[in-house]
Length: 174
Image (cartoon, rainbow, N blue to C red; front, side):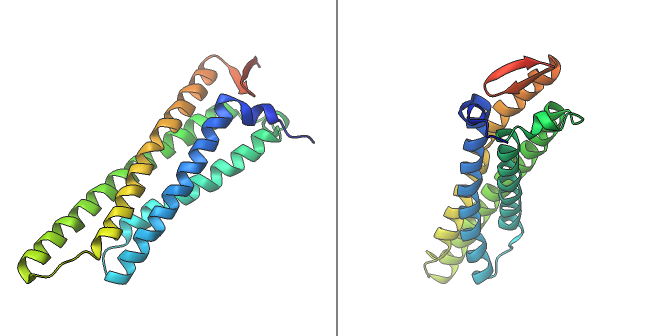
């Protein structure tokens, strides 16, 4: 059982690697935000959602890269891989969109709270800046993940519509 290096070099393989890199970076930013939220007693739901989305996306994309690189999609023919990928990409787009919006809105609310706190108590609240910054960065990275997921969804939807399988940069009829 050999590895299909052509898949990793193909456009769809590179898209999946870009998604993996963005998810790992989002995971790092989300974990920093979660630590700050836990330490200072803020709601951890938004950063936990960001972590959940980026973690499960990174794990599933890694599994898919391995399956497609080892040509598991050719060995398991009962599964319509294009349909699986279209559904997966659609769910991930929705989850990353929610994570992006929640993170940025929450960080904005915390910065507003910080301004109100500093005006009313004449104290600085610079401690919230790294937290809000990491949450904003995680939200922006989750939003940036939209781009490669959109390309992946488009490629797989076209392959599903035309009944072809995108394999190693080339399309082959089924």
